[in-house]
Length: 179
Image 1 (cartoon, rainbow, N blue to C red):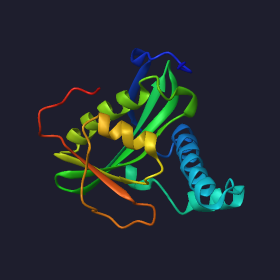
Image 2: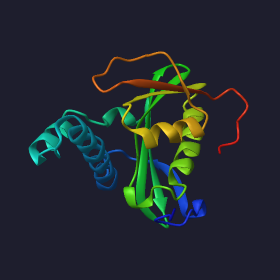
Image 3: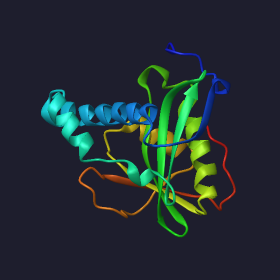
Image 4: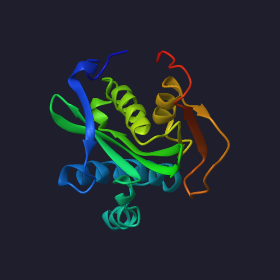
């Protein structure tokens, strides 16, 4: 098995960012196109049209990922933005993780692990004791990433049209080593 890129987590840095910047909006567009096209290919046997993708993106704003009840993170690989994740407060001690994305060419380089470590720190800064998320069953790479980083399957807490599996992570429990 050959890796497409070396695993150098030291090349990754993650920091909070304004979700409305052109850089953030570009990553969010790529994220949406990626997950939407996976859905279209799986269920319709084709890519989404530009009109379908842009309409769906417009119907999925990310403004809830800003203060005071949200936070947006951008991951930089060797100084260039290549990943993102967002958090939004659900209640006083729970945040929801959403919009997790690493550009395909850099998957497997440790960017997802670095992003999730920063998510934990950011969630704690928002006063969270727990992180929850929902995702689709076909997003197997993301699901594996969450499980490797301490998330466990939980009962449904949401009923969105694409929510098929739910995960949670207790931030008060002793950290377990990611494998």
